[in-house]
Amino acid sequence: MLEYNINQGMPKSQQPNTKIRVTYSSIFLGMILCCALLTGIAPQPIVSVLAVAASAGLFLTGQIYLAFPVMIFYYSSFGTLAGMSVYRYYSFFLLLDVVIKNRIVVQKWQVAPLLMFMLYVVCVVFPDNLRRGIFVLVDILCVIVIINGFLNDAEGLKRFFTIYVVTAFAAYFTGLVIQSTVTGIMQVGNEYME
Picture 1 (cartoon, rainbow, N blue to C red):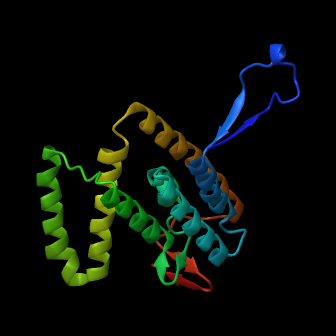
Picture 2 (cartoon, rainbow, N blue to C red):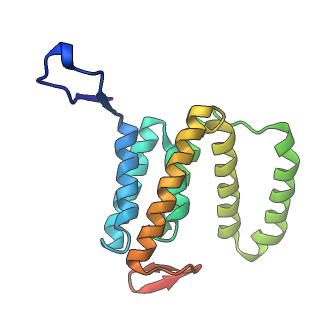
């Protein structure tokens, strides 16, 4: 954690207690938000590399869950890196964090719906597209992990939804700047992918 006292140079008697505390997780989250704001302005490969690097940094700080709202809002805007979307790299880091720190928590009431959903994916989605089926299962695991492992206290929930609201406004303004329309298509270079 880095600290900076903005009252430096003032006499001690006149200094209010105003220290700015900047954590490494805040720096990496800020990098991801900057990447989000640069979509459509900066070249997509650069934004993708920076977003994956910042996700890796968040993984190292143990606060990887904080970037989930940004990744959801900018899923298609971040594009791909080495043939895989930036969100997939993020979900890999998230699940790796959960496995390393042994935060795998599934509540009893979630078991039956989860098994039914997994059965649906195995019987319906896998025969059609194995890769998509695996990604759907990973997405559901990410949501369950975030809800049960990270958002179980008031402070974590408050911080998560603050980032969600900031990201929603950023996505709105980014959409205005790049004149985005909602489609299921992602632009990679000069090609469009679903």
